[in-house]
Amino acid sequence: MRPETLAVHAGAEPDAATGAVAPPIHLSTTFAHGPAAERIAGYEYQREGNPTQDRLETALAALESGTAALAFASGMAAMTALLESLPNDSRILIPDDCYTGLRLLAQDFLTRRGIAAVAVDMSDLAAVRVASANGIALIWAETPSNPRLKIADIAALAQIAHAHDALLACDNTFATPVLQQPLALGADVVMHSTTKYFGGHSDVLGGALVFAQHDALYERAAHYRHVTGAIASPFSTWLTLRGCRSLPARMAWHCRNARAVAEFLAAHPRVERVNWPGLHTHAQHAVAAKQMRDFGGMMSVEIRGGRDAALAVASKVKVFTNATSLGGCESLLEHRASVEGEHPVSPQNLLRISVGLEHPDDLVADLAQALA
Ligand SMILES: Cc1ncc(COP(=O)(O)O)c(C=O)c1O
Image (cartoon, rainbow, N blue to C red):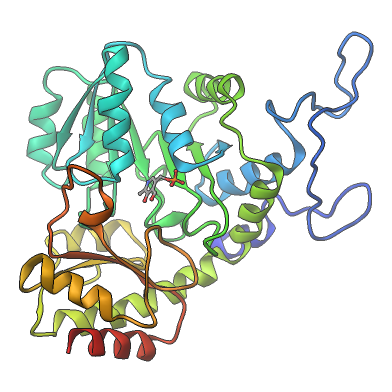
């Protein structure tokens, strides 16, 4: 089945007890069992597993063409469960451009277990090969990356990882499975912040791991989630499940709007550079075109004149809201360096843009008046 159909139907069977077409939210933390803890309907305690979560995991696995999925309380919880499932003293490669949380997790926590995370430009395969030469346990790809929208060749990274008996994990948050299927390209596990496009309405935090195989890695991450309690609430789970149903339809609209915004910005004299993989001027456009169905709703723009010029644009937008996060109906814009804490890595003239579902002409008009 195609993604549009899977998105609507995976994990969407009518409720067996009532015939309800919309899925029930099971709030129960505990489930009746037999006197020797025999399970009656397969469940025991909400933190270990529950029916609302099962539906979401079925949908996530189907959409990513995976074998098994785990839903989490946040994207960071999902990322942590995977990386904490690696052995002590592992060496891993992470992208030089990536979500700040991955960098912080690596430097503040993974180091305690002797895990060394080496930052590499994942769009430079020669650099990845050199960095892999001393042995690696995992390559972490984030493509498109946050916030510079760099593209990594997933199939090529999978080959490099597997040549070293290592895993390839891919943060697919920006693309979503509608636009890009890392498991089909050779990745072993896909991670999502479902807070973004899956939820789709800026009102639910969540994360996911989707696995190519129902294997020992899946078991370790599931055990980690169960024991550390990184599970989402049933209501959050239900909201994310609801978001899945319209994900392909929303992504088509995000992509259409993003093209209009990117083309407008690219032609504007006050713009130094637009980072959107759909533009032919993007350094990895060809790789993006090879592995993505469309180019997504995320971009960043570098404004001529440095930090002050970028902040002036940010202060003038009216339809766009200055806010962090992405993937909701409303268009957001943020001066990324300002939200990166004490040691920002983004260029000071960079504004990250999450293009929403408004009419593209209104978005372009808003940016035009802010750049005037
Ligand atoms: C690409 C990417 N990965 C992971 C995360 C972390 O997800 P969460 O905020 O749901 O923990 C984010 C959050 O912005 C993100 O943009």
